Image 1 (spheres, helix red, strand yellow):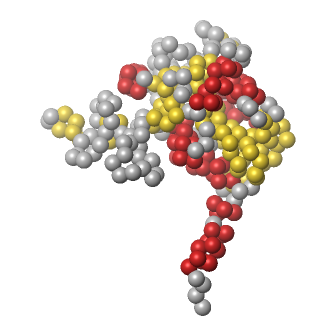
Image 2 (cartoon, one colour):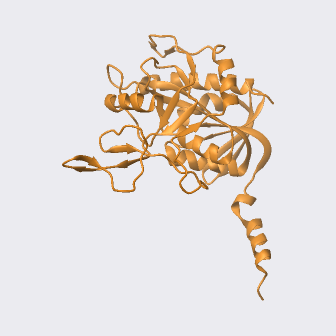
Image 3 (tube, one colour):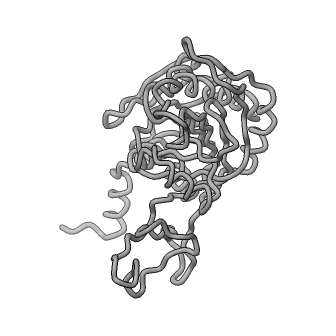
Length: 300
């Protein structure tokens, strides 16, 4: 005996993971970091903790600064970040997405320890790698790129969103939510950031900078020449390995997004060796400090 197609479709929807895996209906702010050193202060500040294990990912619900949250690690880099963000959206009632972590500084006017809250993010290595010929680097016919300058063989490309109309322009920039940026501006001048880590102190007192552009790619950047390219071509202030991927998922899901990134190093722009290991704890603490003040200031 064959069931009618409509009944089969309904049974499929009832059994589908997307419908069955919601584990908590409380409206919550998703607070995300990439790896353990970035999230310690946020975990410690979260009360009423309850942990859910989903495919090996630990999602911790609770209250941070009086607000319901779900706190979790995205994992390092773009695919992990997109995957775990979507897992959270599928299983929890997420009202806003907040990323907290470290990053490399691209803007020469910024210093280690500063917290950058970019208003838009690009995936800088979404690109075409061109063939090298006697005439220079050449792309195959029909390969569309952006008006952004290439870096040798690397030609930046935009991204077509699911559901884009045929012929629609590809997207380069993924925005942070304007309302969340407004809240970030309100708390920026009120937080006290850490200046010293162990026996080493920053030359300049760290500050919170709201606005400007950030870029993300699955690459740890410690190269002065490419750093200069990102600054000149993307007008980037900060570079990391996750934020643009999370911004992409947030835009598709129509969920407000913002990222707080504290500079642990200068992405190859410093006079000496990379200082991420020296200032990672300080930068993580500074980002978490701003995020806690931000969450506290969010409207209920």
